[in-house]
Length: 421
Image (cartoon, rainbow, N blue to C red; front, side):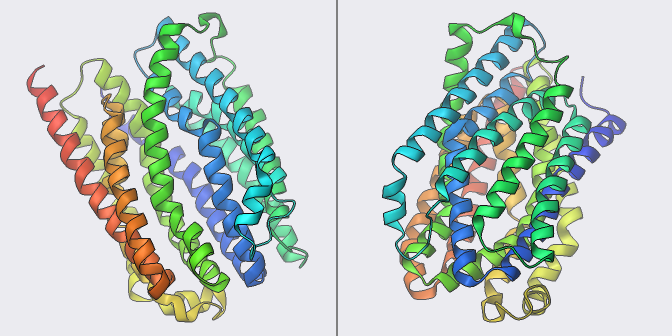
């Protein structure tokens, strides 16, 4: 049965608050940018990108399979799918962490102008604790238990934000290592609370089996492709700026992204609810309302974020001057470009989630792959001559092309399936 409005609000509000805690971390990220010297902040931005990439390969791509397959019609088979996804996530987490430690020297030498010494072991710690925290978190979301997830996310922010905030307040924040340690502690706190809340949902008696493993790996393969391509077009700009542009450009671009990241969290909250609810309805035969629900979610997202987007586009220089005390004033066009792009992102993001929920994760993969190709190509061409502004325009082209493609494929598939039922 489709979610009623009152239930949608009851589920959606905690999801919004949950993502809002990540938005609050965005504010802390702004303070980090203000506190660190350009070189230290460039190291932090690069370390963050490496952490996200390692987290993706370290089981992050399997978590989407856990959320999708674990949200299907309740039963022993669904529980076995969830158990299998958990096991695969843990395996990849430790495997990638071992590889990162083994080949860390090569990564150090690739960025000779950015100091990464001693950072990689901390990134590994964040990757492992992050995977452990997200397993019970996603299992809770399969039951639309956004309230429990909200409290764990708030706890995570309190720990991480509290530690880093105190370091900033006392003037002893010096680099990425301290932030990574705080993140690991926050992950452990979230894991403990999520694991406690999931105790009545986790069903180890369902076991794991080869059939479940095949389904998990098949879905996860598309998730990996989608996430990897998504990482390319969302983080390549930072990585390529670090290689092709001065450290100051990396810092300025990252600072603008920190401001726009808070807007993106609204879409993430919508996806937290859409993936499990659409997946369950789709596998139960309730297909006709999917697109209407998706467009309604986009409308709500746009309504919530519109005032912030208008401010970012109309007053970018003033906002940068106030937030960063004039530190990145000359880079205000980056903020205006990325701020305006926030109006387009919900279309691609939400329809990517819906396509996966409709058992078509390949749509998201194909479209994000398209976005990645567009982004990398334009980054190579634009960054050497335009720096961070060129990276921003490359991101715009990538997001728009991917959004148009995934919407077309998803609506076409929905029409075909709805007419046949």
